[in-house]
Image (cartoon, rainbow, N blue to C red; front, side, top):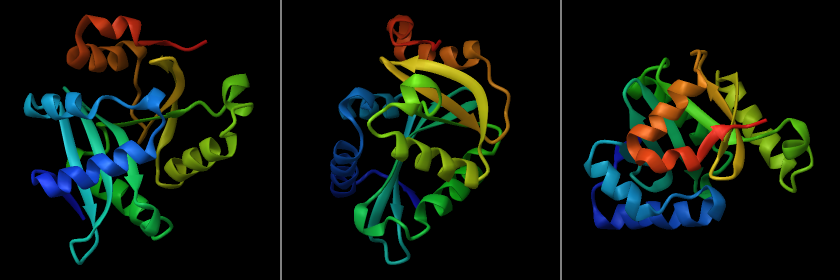
Length: 181
């Protein structure tokens, strides 16, 4: 079950899992996301089980008609329980299938196939494909990391993708987001 995070206690649980789950090169400052949430650009969601126990997080970046699943993490003790797939289903209901966009570390070409975490990258991609997402063919370099962009079938141009970030990050986006080769 997805719930918007507003209490300090739950926010701290989300922050701890966020800090532990993602590489430094892919993390935005948590304080930045909190600030932009106040401006309507981020949803910070807790994933809870039926007893209200914190099980994970979903952080959405919102821009116009796009909702980027910026971060999804399931707490280690709840991994393998189906919560990830259930969460994607809830996100589809909440934001609509046509809006959702996901970035994953590149799995093809030298950057993906020779990466130290190549198996994790392929496992992550298989998870999203199993849950109905499709590759857009769009490869981007985001803050120095090559990413593949997936959707539930929506066509997405680099211009639309870039505009999403530009709207939130401003002119510094040009230095952070570019097409990958």
